[in-house]
Each structure stands twice: as structure tokens, then as C-alpha cells.
Amino acid sequence: MLEVTVIRADTERVRRALAKRGVRVDLSAFLALDQERRNTRTETERLRADRKRISAEVAGARRAGEGAEELQARAKELAALLTERESRLTELERECREFLDPLPNLPDEDVPAGGKERNEVLRTVGEPADLPFPAKDHVTLARSLDLVDYQRGTKLGGSGFWVYGGDGARLEWALLNYFVAAHLSDGYRFVLPPHILTHEAGYAAGQFPKFADEVFAVERGETGPERFLLPTSETALVNLHRDETLPEAELPLRYFAYSPCYRKEIGGYRSTERGTLRGHQFNKVEMFQFAHPERSDEAHDELLAKAERLVADLGLTYRVTRLAAEDTSAAMARTLDIEVLLPSVGGHVEVSSVSNARDYQARRGNIRYRPRHGRSAFVHTLNASGLATSRLMPALLEQHQREDGTVALPEVLRPWFPDLLLTPLTTARRLTAAERNA
Image 1: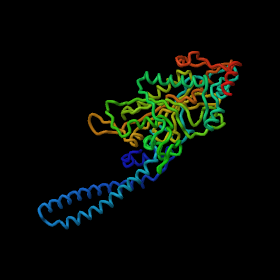
Image 2: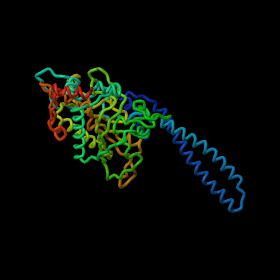
Image 3: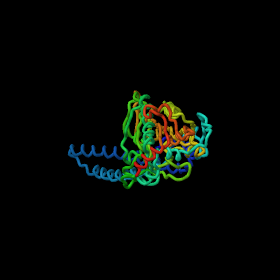
Image 4: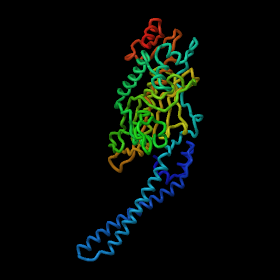
């Protein structure tokens, strides 16, 4: 949620920042509404004080045996006026909230205006492999290596689902274990969150109300999904300390979580969506920090470095891209994407988004910290994929394939995949697979 005092004090800057996202709203109308709300609140507080004073005078007159008819009449008038003013204040607060709730976060100053066409590649790490043989795409490789069963995934869940089997399931689990081990060694706290969250969780994360239709609702109410399947662990992690005030000395709090992610994304037959590149369910390890505002940028750099190290240690060529304002998630002030090279699509695909929400989510979730001196303030929240697997596996297959049809896996996966080699189905393996799939 945007800070109202910032809208009041620097209206033009807020207007320009929202315009970078293509959002144009009547801030003047909101400020007039906000002024009426403030005036009504002041009047309501004055009426409450007057009613309290007159009630005391009525009680004093009765104790003294004096008549209190005029005071009682005045108290009745005040009570009626106070009820009317309180009702109006409730209405004004609702209208102000309805205006603010859908507004996205203000992008940082260095975030380019516009959509995906304005994204900026900051650096590229590694060189594309010059393979001396005709390269295969990840779908062909996954099938020849008996890693993913797309047909049966569709049979079980419909379009946008797949089944990992055999070495595919082993590789998926090896990647997840690699991420978990890396984050534990860096001192992050491991969390396994519930997969079903409440409406309040979606609101604090910035998912609701604007993007309520993008989640899989389990229960619906008048205001949207009452409970829903989490689209990412970030939605759960940001709510761990909702309505809490954290000691300043404990910041930053560093967490990571594993979960499947459930999203209403439609897979297709285009090269950029085939296989496991886009689907309704995929696995991801998510990093999250509750940070002190003065060290927010430092926390963002830390998360980016961690995510980059994971990708680099997998031996993948990748690039880091700064997202333009319209391509940045609504709750985030800035996002840097790590995108791995995928030759079959003629470009790169995102495997980690490293984002800083500043105090936007903390305001929605009322998450504060208490300094040793002074008043409490809102924390900053940051998240980063660490990592998502559904696009990593295609990149590993395409970048590490060999002429004989095998795929060499990186050394970091040896603890969970000791032979570090994916091999095509032999005649014997094909018979076993056929028997298993019969």
C-alpha cells in the first residue's frame, strides 16, 4: 500500500512514478477525499471529547442534586451527531482504502518506464556453447532420456501439467536438495509453509484485490478468494510476521521455503511455452528477507548474489536483466531477473526474480520494527527465487547435451545424483519403461 503522507507531500512525483507503470489515476480527487476523512476524524474526536465532558457534568449535577435536563438533551444531540460522523468516517475510510488498495508500488527512480521492450540487460555471464553437432531441444531430450511424461501429465491434470519420472524425478529432487543445502549453509531459516492461504495473506502480499482472479481459489467469499492455493512461497513468507513488531536488533530476518507453486498460467505449443517452461504447477525454492529500511539495498544485492551463484554453479550461461516498470510485479519497487540461455527458443528464460517491495507489503500486512529509540516503523520486504526448477531443467538439458544423446550434469549435484549423467533409453530401458507405462 502506498503511504498517504507521500501522496500528500509529493503528489507530482507519485503521479510520475505511477505513469511509468502506465497507471493514471486522479490523485487530486483522492486528496480531496483524504482531506474530508481527516477533517471528519478530527470532528469525530472532538465530539467524543465533548460527549465525555458532558457525561461527567451530568453525573456531577446528579450527585449535587441539581437538574440536568439541558445537559442530558445536549448529550443526546451529541450522541446522534457522533453516530452520524462515525458512520461517515467509516465510509470515507472505506473509500480511501478502495482507492489505495489496487494501486501498485512506486518503481524506484532507476527503473525504466514502459513494458518488456524497455527491460535492460545489465550483464551476461558465460558464452553460448558452440556444439559441433545438431542440437536437440529440451522437449526432445526430455523424452529421449525418459525424464518427463507430458501426455500422462495432461491426462492426470489437464493442459499445463506434466509428470517427472525416473531420472527426471531424481534430477528435480537433486536440484531442490542443492538449493536447500546452499541456503542452510548461508544461515537462512528453512520453512515449509501451508499450501492453502487465507484472503488476508493474499492481501498483505499485494495479490488481492487486483489479481484475485489469477489464483486457484479453494473457497470464495464476497470479497474474493477466502482461501486459495499459494502461487509462490513469497505469499506465505511475507505473512509470517503479519501484525507483528520486530526488535530492530533481529533484522534482517532471512528465510527460505520450498513449495509447489500453483498458477493460472496457460501452457501452449509455442516454442517459448513448450514442455515445462510454463504450467499450472511447478516447484520452487524461495528466499525472503525482512530488512531494515537503511539496509534494504544491501539485502537486495545479497539475494541477487546468492541466486546468481546457484545458476553459475550449475554451469549455465545466463544474464541479469533490470525489469521495466510495467514488467515489474505490482507489489515491487524493483526487480532484477536472472535469465538462463535456452537455445531452442532463441533467447533466455527467467529462473529467478530478485525483488524489493520496500515498505509496500509491510504496510498492507502491518509489519513493523521497533528501534531502541524512537517510534516503530515499517520493515522492508524482499524476495528472490532460489531457484525455480521448471525452466532450469530445460536449460541444463540444452546447454549440457552431448552428441551421443547423453547430458552431463554439474558437479554440485553429485551428492544427490552420483553418476552425473543422463542417458537415453536403451532397448532394455525402453522395455522397462513400456512395462511401467502399460
